[in-house]
Image 1 (cartoon, one colour):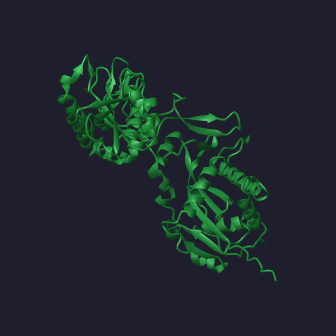
Image 2: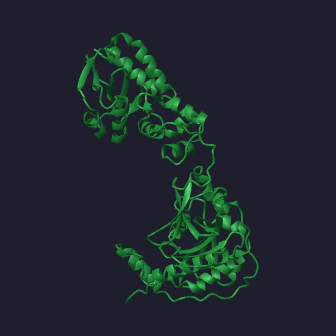
Image 3: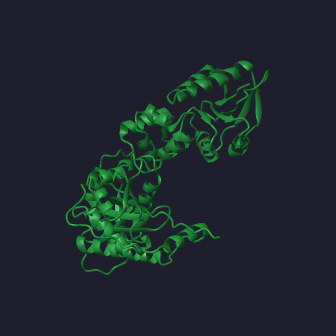
Length: 461
């Protein structure tokens, strides 16, 4: 006797948000932005925001989207009935419609409206990840929706109508055997099982009037954006779409003059800071706190997304021991430091910077008598004309074995007195306690052993 196969539970994710990557421009029509931009900054480029509405089949890459100007929002009831009527991939009415708490608060009558047509409304918990993932995926997909259209009318109403048609065509293509499930047989089977379901036609409910209250939650993604950078419009020669790209190609694009500029030919401070953060004994959060800046601002700075104001930048450079070298015309990792070997490329670049390209005789130091540290290996970087820097490498880790290859002119192991080795270990421990202690403790260490400098090369014998 065969057991009947139960049809899958029909669940749709419903979401609304201001589109992160799509805006309207009076001359260019719908424009895609390469990197998200704050709404206030978008005004400088005469860009008007659009609302993205979407429905995604829970657990499957099947979605339907539509759009509306922020100044002319669509009612949720109108959007939902339109989707369940036109979007064949959704298979009509679901059993469950899942929304987030912000949308539920904005539309307190939605639950009763859905109950009238047999749909149960459920509010996702704050910890649930699938609904936010559906929205993020839709936002990213929206970036690629606009197609090349030779339109004389680039007005807001016409441009949004055309964008909605493009979104509908995209859904139809995918629902009729597009690229869904390619390379994943299990996912492909689930999609086919879903698309084999009979379509449930929706009933009728009143759609007149706006049934929700727009609010700041629509653009909550703005909070995670770095300060804006210079951008320019570019018409793609490949697909004919207009993009707002990040960069400095257009001299006539307005730009704020608040940011601090060094005026130097090559400002590599962010690059050095990024490598130092990868080798620093303390967390980026601790470094940011010590420098008096927000962690996200530090992350944006080292990733090249923004600059820092003069005070914040000088504070960070002081903590990290970064100085400008007039001789070479760029910034250098002056130190001295206690660093942790974690990422090979970062250690290699910092070593080359400290040693001026390899003008050093790095070596691992061990006590001449007694046991070495059971947890760490200590590698001395004794660059010409500079105080010593130590790189701590955890014993047993692969990176400890790679240090001779990462440091040019590596001289192997050198024995030092027990007193000196104990001082190295205790100095490194104190330097690792807090970010501001790192350079300070190593400068004090160098002063204690000034007499062991010979020809500007520190000798630990």
